[in-house]
Amino acid sequence: MTGLGLFLALASAATWGVADFWGGLVSRRLPTIAVTVISQAAGFVVVLVALGLHGSLDHRSFWIGILAGLGGGSGLAAFYRALSLGTMSIVSPLAACGAVVPFVISIATGERPSVLAFGGAGLALAGAVLASVEEHRSEAPDRARAVLLAVVAAVLLGVFTYFLGLGGRQGDALSTLVGARVGSLAFLIALALVIREKPFVPRGSIAVVAAIGVCDMTANALFAFASTHGLLALVSVLGSLYPIMTVMLAHLLLHERLSPVQKAGVGAALVGVAALAAG
Image 1 (cartoon, rainbow, N blue to C red):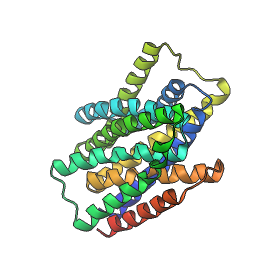
Image 2: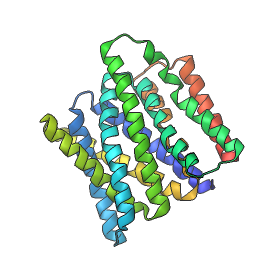
Image 3: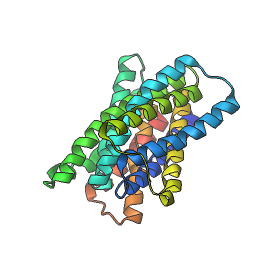
C-alpha cells in the first residue's frame, strides 16, 4: 500500500468516526429515519455539485455504486438506531466487524497481502472490536437490541464498503459515490414510506444533521480514492478503524468510561496499523 493510500484510508476512518459520533448523538433525540434521510440528502447535494464540475458519469461505476448504496443506506439506519439504544463506545466497535466482509471477499477474489500486512490487518480488526465483549453481558432489553442491530449493520456496511471500493478501483470513484447515494436514498425513502414515518426534523436541527451527511460523504470519498492506492482488503480494514475516533470522542465529550479491554483494543489497533504500513 502506498503512503497516500494509507493516509486516505486512515483519514476516512477518522471522518467516519466523527460522523458516527454526531449521528448517534442526534439520533437519541430525533427520529432515526429522519436523521439518515436528511443527512444522506445533504451529502448527495455535495456529490452532485462535484459531478457537475467533473462533467461525466461512468455508468458501470454508477451501478456498482447503487449496490453499495443499498447496503450503506440499510446499514446506516440500523447503525444509528443501535447507537441510539446502546452505549456508543460498545456499539460502534461491534459494527466495525463489517470490515471482515470486504476483507474476505477481496482475499477470495485474488488479492494477496504480505504476511506482515495480513497479520497487521487481523490485529487491527481485533483491536477495533474488542470493546464489544462487555455489551453481550448486559441484560437490559434496549442494549440487547442494540447488539443485534449492530451485527446487522456490520454485515450491511461491509457490503457497502466492498462495492464502494470496487467501484473506485475499476472505474470512476465520483460516479460510484453518486450511485451509492442514489441507492441509499432510494432505500431510506422507501423505508420511511413503509413504516409511515415522515423524514422531517425541527428547523433548528437541519444544519447539524446536514453537516453529519457532508462529513459522511467526505469519508466515503476518502475511502473510494484510498481504494485506488492499495489492496481493497487492507484499505477496508483501515477504514474500519472509525470506532477509535468514536470511542475517543465519547470518552472526551460524554465522559463514557474506557475499560481496560477497550484501551487494549485501541493499542492493538494502532500496532496493527503500524504493521500494515510496514507491510
